Image (cartoon, rainbow, N blue to C red; front, top):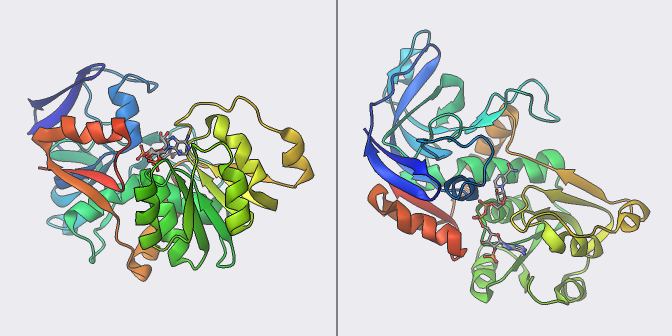
Length: 330
Ligand SMILES: NC(=O)c1ccc[n+]([C@@H]2O[C@H](COP(=O)([O-])OP(=O)(O)OC[C@H]3O[C@@H](n4cnc5c(N)ncnc54)[C@H](OP(=O)(O)O)[C@@H]3O)[C@@H](O)[C@H]2O)c1
Protein backbone atom coordinates (compact mmCIF):
# COMPACT_ATOMS: atom_id res chain seq x y z
CA UNK A 1 0.00 0.00 0.00
CA UNK A 2 0.99 3.62 -0.30
CA UNK A 3 1.73 5.47 2.95
CA UNK A 4 3.03 8.89 3.78
CA UNK A 5 6.18 8.27 5.78
CA UNK A 6 8.19 10.69 7.84
CA UNK A 7 11.78 9.58 7.20
CA UNK A 8 13.49 12.52 8.94
CA UNK A 9 12.40 15.86 10.42
CA UNK A 10 10.45 17.73 7.74
CA UNK A 11 10.85 14.91 5.20
CA UNK A 12 7.54 13.29 4.34
CA UNK A 13 7.62 10.89 1.41
CA UNK A 14 4.94 8.79 -0.25
CA UNK A 15 6.29 5.22 -0.02
CA UNK A 16 5.17 1.75 -1.00
CA UNK A 17 5.08 -0.36 2.19
CA UNK A 18 3.61 -3.71 3.18
CA UNK A 19 -0.15 -3.62 3.85
CA UNK A 20 -0.64 -4.36 7.58
CA UNK A 21 -2.71 -7.37 8.70
CA UNK A 22 -5.07 -7.12 11.66
CA UNK A 23 -4.04 -9.01 14.78
CA UNK A 24 -6.27 -10.39 17.51
CA UNK A 25 -9.14 -7.99 18.25
CA UNK A 26 -8.20 -5.65 15.39
CA UNK A 27 -9.71 -4.57 12.09
CA UNK A 28 -8.12 -3.20 8.95
CA UNK A 29 -9.74 -0.21 7.24
CA UNK A 30 -9.25 0.66 3.59
CA UNK A 31 -9.25 4.43 4.02
CA UNK A 32 -11.22 6.72 1.74
CA UNK A 33 -10.14 9.97 3.40
CA UNK A 34 -7.90 11.23 6.22
CA UNK A 35 -7.70 14.67 7.82
CA UNK A 36 -4.79 16.66 9.24
CA UNK A 37 -4.47 18.03 12.75
CA UNK A 38 -1.95 20.41 14.26
CA UNK A 39 -0.43 17.31 15.90
CA UNK A 40 0.65 16.04 12.47
CA UNK A 41 2.46 19.34 11.95
CA UNK A 42 4.24 19.06 15.34
CA UNK A 43 5.30 15.51 14.40
CA UNK A 44 6.50 16.59 10.95
CA UNK A 45 8.68 19.37 12.36
CA UNK A 46 10.14 17.08 15.03
CA UNK A 47 8.41 18.73 17.99
CA UNK A 48 6.55 15.74 19.38
CA UNK A 49 7.69 13.39 22.14
CA UNK A 50 8.48 9.80 21.14
CA UNK A 51 9.11 10.56 17.47
CA UNK A 52 10.81 7.82 15.40
CA UNK A 53 11.62 7.22 11.73
CA UNK A 54 10.13 6.03 9.51
CA UNK A 55 6.66 6.64 10.88
CA UNK A 56 3.24 7.31 9.37
CA UNK A 57 1.34 10.12 11.10
CA UNK A 58 -2.41 10.76 10.87
CA UNK A 59 -5.11 10.50 13.55
CA UNK A 60 -8.26 11.05 11.53
CA UNK A 61 -9.71 8.67 8.98
CA UNK A 62 -12.83 7.16 7.47
CA UNK A 63 -13.14 4.11 5.24
CA UNK A 64 -14.38 0.56 4.78
CA UNK A 65 -13.41 -2.44 6.94
CA UNK A 66 -11.70 -4.95 4.63
CA UNK A 67 -10.16 -7.45 7.09
CA UNK A 68 -10.88 -8.61 10.62
CA UNK A 69 -8.52 -10.25 13.10
CA UNK A 70 -9.07 -13.18 15.43
CA UNK A 71 -12.03 -12.75 17.74
CA UNK A 72 -13.60 -9.85 15.83
CA UNK A 73 -17.20 -10.12 14.62
CA UNK A 74 -16.94 -10.59 10.84
CA UNK A 75 -20.13 -8.52 10.50
CA UNK A 76 -17.71 -5.54 10.50
CA UNK A 77 -16.50 -6.60 7.03
CA UNK A 78 -17.59 -4.07 4.40
CA UNK A 79 -18.94 -1.59 6.99
CA UNK A 80 -18.35 2.13 6.47
CA UNK A 81 -16.59 3.41 9.59
CA UNK A 82 -14.75 6.27 11.25
CA UNK A 83 -11.89 5.77 13.69
CA UNK A 84 -11.66 6.97 17.29
CA UNK A 85 -7.99 8.05 17.56
CA UNK A 86 -8.01 8.12 21.38
CA UNK A 87 -6.39 4.78 22.22
CA UNK A 88 -6.03 3.06 25.61
CA UNK A 89 -7.95 5.74 27.52
CA UNK A 90 -8.43 3.63 30.66
CA UNK A 91 -11.23 3.38 33.21
CA UNK A 92 -11.66 6.91 34.54
CA UNK A 93 -13.82 9.66 33.07
CA UNK A 94 -11.66 12.23 34.90
CA UNK A 95 -8.49 11.67 32.85
CA UNK A 96 -6.71 9.21 30.59
CA UNK A 97 -4.61 6.42 32.12
CA UNK A 98 -0.96 5.42 31.62
CA UNK A 99 -1.63 3.40 28.43
CA UNK A 100 -3.22 6.34 26.62
CA UNK A 101 -1.83 7.14 23.17
CA UNK A 102 -3.02 8.81 20.00
CA UNK A 103 -3.35 7.13 16.62
CA UNK A 104 -0.52 8.25 14.32
CA UNK A 105 2.38 7.98 16.82
CA UNK A 106 3.49 5.52 18.07
CA UNK A 107 0.91 3.42 16.18
CA UNK A 108 0.92 3.75 12.38
CA UNK A 109 -1.59 6.44 11.45
CA UNK A 110 -4.17 7.25 8.83
CA UNK A 111 -2.03 8.98 6.19
CA UNK A 112 -1.94 5.67 4.33
CA UNK A 113 -4.23 3.61 2.16
CA UNK A 114 -4.95 1.21 5.05
CA UNK A 115 -4.79 1.39 8.83
CA UNK A 116 -5.13 -1.32 11.48
CA UNK A 117 -6.79 -0.43 14.80
CA UNK A 118 -8.47 -2.28 17.68
CA UNK A 119 -12.06 -3.09 16.68
CA UNK A 120 -13.30 -1.15 19.70
CA UNK A 121 -11.97 2.04 18.08
CA UNK A 122 -14.29 1.96 15.07
CA UNK A 123 -17.83 3.30 14.82
CA UNK A 124 -20.31 3.45 11.95
CA UNK A 125 -19.74 6.50 9.75
CA UNK A 126 -22.44 9.11 10.50
CA UNK A 127 -24.88 8.61 7.63
CA UNK A 128 -25.34 12.31 6.82
CA UNK A 129 -21.63 12.87 6.19
CA UNK A 130 -19.52 12.40 3.06
CA UNK A 131 -16.20 10.53 3.35
CA UNK A 132 -14.31 13.82 3.57
CA UNK A 133 -16.63 15.26 6.23
CA UNK A 134 -16.52 12.04 8.26
CA UNK A 135 -12.70 11.95 8.14
CA UNK A 136 -12.62 15.56 9.41
CA UNK A 137 -14.54 14.76 12.59
CA UNK A 138 -12.64 12.40 14.95
CA UNK A 139 -9.75 14.09 16.79
CA UNK A 140 -10.92 17.69 16.72
CA UNK A 141 -14.59 16.80 17.24
CA UNK A 142 -13.79 14.59 20.24
CA UNK A 143 -11.53 17.22 21.82
CA UNK A 144 -14.10 19.99 21.34
CA UNK A 145 -16.92 17.81 22.69
CA UNK A 146 -15.11 16.82 25.87
CA UNK A 147 -13.90 20.39 26.45
CA UNK A 148 -17.38 21.86 26.15
CA UNK A 149 -19.59 19.21 27.70
CA UNK A 150 -17.57 16.90 29.98
CA UNK A 151 -15.20 19.59 31.30
CA UNK A 152 -17.03 22.96 31.07
CA UNK A 153 -20.48 21.37 31.46
CA UNK A 154 -21.93 23.73 28.88
CA UNK A 155 -25.54 24.82 29.27
CA UNK A 156 -27.78 26.58 26.76
CA UNK A 157 -27.64 29.86 28.72
CA UNK A 158 -23.85 30.08 28.56
CA UNK A 159 -22.04 32.85 26.70
CA UNK A 160 -19.03 31.15 25.08
CA UNK A 161 -15.78 32.54 23.66
CA UNK A 162 -13.82 30.28 21.29
CA UNK A 163 -10.30 31.56 20.55
CA UNK A 164 -8.47 31.17 17.21
CA UNK A 165 -11.48 30.08 15.16
CA UNK A 166 -9.24 29.00 12.27
CA UNK A 167 -8.26 25.94 14.33
CA UNK A 168 -9.86 22.55 13.83
CA UNK A 169 -10.93 22.06 17.46
CA UNK A 170 -12.08 25.68 17.70
CA UNK A 171 -14.41 25.33 14.74
CA UNK A 172 -16.06 22.21 16.19
CA UNK A 173 -16.39 24.01 19.54
CA UNK A 174 -18.26 26.80 17.71
CA UNK A 175 -20.54 24.39 15.84
CA UNK A 176 -21.29 22.23 18.91
CA UNK A 177 -21.92 25.21 21.23
CA UNK A 178 -24.24 26.83 18.69
CA UNK A 179 -26.09 23.51 18.26
CA UNK A 180 -26.45 23.31 22.05
CA UNK A 181 -28.14 26.72 22.09
CA UNK A 182 -25.31 28.77 23.63
CA UNK A 183 -24.38 32.33 22.63
CA UNK A 184 -21.00 32.04 20.91
CA UNK A 185 -18.31 34.61 20.10
CA UNK A 186 -14.90 33.97 18.57
CA UNK A 187 -11.42 35.44 18.20
CA UNK A 188 -9.25 35.28 15.09
CA UNK A 189 -6.39 37.01 13.31
CA UNK A 190 -8.60 37.14 10.22
CA UNK A 191 -11.70 39.28 9.59
CA UNK A 192 -12.68 36.82 6.87
CA UNK A 193 -12.62 33.87 9.30
CA UNK A 194 -14.73 35.87 11.77
CA UNK A 195 -17.27 36.48 8.99
CA UNK A 196 -17.27 32.74 8.18
CA UNK A 197 -17.80 31.97 11.89
CA UNK A 198 -20.77 34.36 11.97
CA UNK A 199 -22.24 32.49 9.00
CA UNK A 200 -22.02 29.33 11.16
CA UNK A 201 -23.91 30.95 14.03
CA UNK A 202 -21.35 33.01 16.00
CA UNK A 203 -22.61 36.41 17.21
CA UNK A 204 -19.35 38.14 16.25
CA UNK A 205 -15.62 38.13 16.81
CA UNK A 206 -12.52 40.00 17.85
CA UNK A 207 -8.97 40.20 16.49
CA UNK A 208 -6.70 38.74 19.20
CA UNK A 209 -3.73 40.66 17.72
CA UNK A 210 -5.23 43.97 18.86
CA UNK A 211 -3.84 44.88 22.31
CA UNK A 212 -7.28 46.01 23.58
CA UNK A 213 -9.32 43.13 22.12
CA UNK A 214 -10.36 41.91 25.59
CA UNK A 215 -11.88 45.30 26.49
CA UNK A 216 -13.68 45.49 23.15
CA UNK A 217 -15.01 41.96 23.63
CA UNK A 218 -16.50 42.64 27.05
CA UNK A 219 -17.94 45.96 25.82
CA UNK A 220 -19.59 44.32 22.80
CA UNK A 221 -20.65 40.97 24.18
CA UNK A 222 -20.42 41.10 27.98
CA UNK A 223 -18.15 38.71 29.89
CA UNK A 224 -18.03 34.99 29.00
CA UNK A 225 -19.06 32.08 31.20
CA UNK A 226 -17.17 29.48 29.11
CA UNK A 227 -13.91 30.06 27.22
CA UNK A 228 -12.36 27.41 24.95
CA UNK A 229 -8.67 28.07 24.19
CA UNK A 230 -6.00 26.21 22.24
CA UNK A 231 -3.42 29.00 21.94
CA UNK A 232 -2.32 29.70 25.54
CA UNK A 233 0.92 31.78 25.49
CA UNK A 234 0.80 35.39 26.63
CA UNK A 235 -2.86 35.56 25.56
CA UNK A 236 -4.03 33.26 28.35
CA UNK A 237 -3.84 36.01 30.96
CA UNK A 238 -6.34 38.19 29.06
CA UNK A 239 -8.82 35.32 29.09
CA UNK A 240 -9.07 35.83 32.87
CA UNK A 241 -10.19 39.43 32.18
CA UNK A 242 -13.01 38.45 29.84
CA UNK A 243 -14.40 35.72 32.09
CA UNK A 244 -17.43 36.19 34.37
CA UNK A 245 -16.89 35.48 38.08
CA UNK A 246 -17.21 31.70 38.39
CA UNK A 247 -16.37 31.25 34.68
CA UNK A 248 -14.83 28.09 33.22
CA UNK A 249 -11.72 28.43 31.03
CA UNK A 250 -10.88 25.26 29.12
CA UNK A 251 -7.33 24.85 27.78
CA UNK A 252 -6.73 22.17 25.14
CA UNK A 253 -3.54 23.41 23.46
CA UNK A 254 -0.54 25.72 23.59
CA UNK A 255 0.06 26.76 19.99
CA UNK A 256 1.64 29.98 21.37
CA UNK A 257 3.64 28.24 24.11
CA UNK A 258 3.38 28.71 27.87
CA UNK A 259 1.91 31.88 29.39
CA UNK A 260 4.54 34.37 30.50
CA UNK A 261 2.35 35.41 33.44
CA UNK A 262 -0.92 34.36 34.96
CA UNK A 263 -2.70 36.55 37.52
CA UNK A 264 -3.37 33.99 40.27
CA UNK A 265 -5.28 36.59 42.31
CA UNK A 266 -7.86 36.89 39.54
CA UNK A 267 -8.23 33.11 39.44
CA UNK A 268 -9.03 32.68 43.14
CA UNK A 269 -10.81 35.96 43.84
CA UNK A 270 -13.12 35.55 40.89
CA UNK A 271 -13.66 31.84 41.52
CA UNK A 272 -12.47 30.87 38.05
CA UNK A 273 -12.07 27.25 36.98
CA UNK A 274 -9.05 26.63 34.79
CA UNK A 275 -9.75 23.26 33.17
CA UNK A 276 -7.35 21.19 31.09
CA UNK A 277 -8.67 18.77 28.53
CA UNK A 278 -7.20 16.23 26.10
CA UNK A 279 -9.01 14.15 23.47
CA UNK A 280 -11.77 12.11 25.16
CA UNK A 281 -12.91 8.86 26.73
CA UNK A 282 -14.88 6.16 24.87
CA UNK A 283 -17.97 7.63 26.54
CA UNK A 284 -17.13 11.11 25.20
CA UNK A 285 -16.62 9.58 21.73
CA UNK A 286 -20.03 7.86 21.74
CA UNK A 287 -21.73 10.99 23.08
CA UNK A 288 -20.00 13.16 20.45
CA UNK A 289 -21.17 10.91 17.60
CA UNK A 290 -24.74 10.88 18.97
CA UNK A 291 -24.66 14.69 19.28
CA UNK A 292 -23.41 15.10 15.69
CA UNK A 293 -26.16 12.80 14.39
CA UNK A 294 -28.88 14.41 16.52
CA UNK A 295 -28.02 17.96 15.49
CA UNK A 296 -26.98 17.15 11.92
CA UNK A 297 -23.59 18.82 12.48
CA UNK A 298 -21.53 18.90 9.29
CA UNK A 299 -17.76 19.36 9.72
CA UNK A 300 -16.28 22.20 7.69
CA UNK A 301 -13.81 20.91 5.12
CA UNK A 302 -11.69 23.73 3.78
CA UNK A 303 -9.73 21.78 1.22
CA UNK A 304 -9.54 18.23 -0.13
CA UNK A 305 -6.34 17.13 -1.83
CA UNK A 306 -5.08 13.78 -3.13
CA UNK A 307 -2.40 12.10 -0.97
CA UNK A 308 0.22 13.00 -3.61
CA UNK A 309 -0.30 16.65 -2.62
CA UNK A 310 0.28 16.13 1.10
CA UNK A 311 3.00 18.81 1.03
CA UNK A 312 0.44 21.44 -0.01
CA UNK A 313 -1.96 20.15 2.63
CA UNK A 314 0.63 20.59 5.41
CA UNK A 315 1.37 24.05 4.01
CA UNK A 316 -2.11 25.23 5.08
CA UNK A 317 -1.40 24.23 8.69
CA UNK A 318 2.01 25.90 8.62
CA UNK A 319 0.53 29.17 7.32
CA UNK A 320 -2.67 29.00 9.45
CA UNK A 321 -4.67 29.99 6.38
CA UNK A 322 -7.28 27.22 6.73
CA UNK A 323 -10.86 27.60 7.96
CA UNK A 324 -11.93 24.05 8.68
CA UNK A 325 -10.18 20.79 8.07
CA UNK A 326 -7.67 19.92 5.38
CA UNK A 327 -8.50 16.46 4.03
CA UNK A 328 -6.43 13.99 2.00
CA UNK A 329 -8.00 11.33 -0.22
CA UNK A 330 -6.55 8.06 -1.51
N1 LIG B 1 -5.36 18.45 23.98
C1 LIG B 1 -5.80 17.84 22.90
O1 LIG B 1 -6.38 16.75 22.93
C2 LIG B 1 -5.63 18.54 21.59
C3 LIG B 1 -6.39 18.14 20.50
C4 LIG B 1 -6.27 18.85 19.31
C5 LIG B 1 -5.37 19.90 19.22
N2 LIG B 1 -4.61 20.23 20.30
C6 LIG B 1 -3.68 21.37 20.23
O2 LIG B 1 -4.50 22.53 20.06
C7 LIG B 1 -3.87 23.47 19.20
C8 LIG B 1 -4.76 23.76 18.00
O3 LIG B 1 -4.86 22.60 17.21
P1 LIG B 1 -5.89 22.49 16.01
O4 LIG B 1 -5.47 21.30 15.19
O5 LIG B 1 -7.27 22.58 16.50
O6 LIG B 1 -5.62 23.90 15.32
P2 LIG B 1 -5.04 24.30 13.89
O7 LIG B 1 -6.05 23.81 12.91
O8 LIG B 1 -3.65 23.93 13.75
O9 LIG B 1 -5.12 25.94 13.96
C9 LIG B 1 -4.36 26.75 14.72
C10 LIG B 1 -5.14 28.08 14.91
O10 LIG B 1 -4.65 28.66 16.08
C11 LIG B 1 -5.06 30.01 16.05
N3 LIG B 1 -4.10 30.85 16.74
C12 LIG B 1 -2.81 31.05 16.43
N4 LIG B 1 -2.28 31.96 17.29
C13 LIG B 1 -3.26 32.31 18.14
C14 LIG B 1 -3.35 33.21 19.25
N5 LIG B 1 -2.30 33.94 19.65
N6 LIG B 1 -4.54 33.33 19.89
C15 LIG B 1 -5.62 32.62 19.50
N7 LIG B 1 -5.58 31.75 18.46
C16 LIG B 1 -4.44 31.60 17.80
C17 LIG B 1 -5.18 30.44 14.58
O11 LIG B 1 -6.50 30.93 14.42
P3 LIG B 1 -6.87 32.09 13.36
O12 LIG B 1 -6.43 31.56 12.04
O13 LIG B 1 -8.34 32.20 13.50
O14 LIG B 1 -6.14 33.33 13.77
C18 LIG B 1 -4.90 29.14 13.84
O15 LIG B 1 -5.73 28.97 12.72
C19 LIG B 1 -2.53 22.85 18.82
O16 LIG B 1 -1.54 23.33 19.68
C20 LIG B 1 -2.75 21.36 19.04
O17 LIG B 1 -1.56 20.68 19.28
C21 LIG B 1 -4.72 19.57 21.47
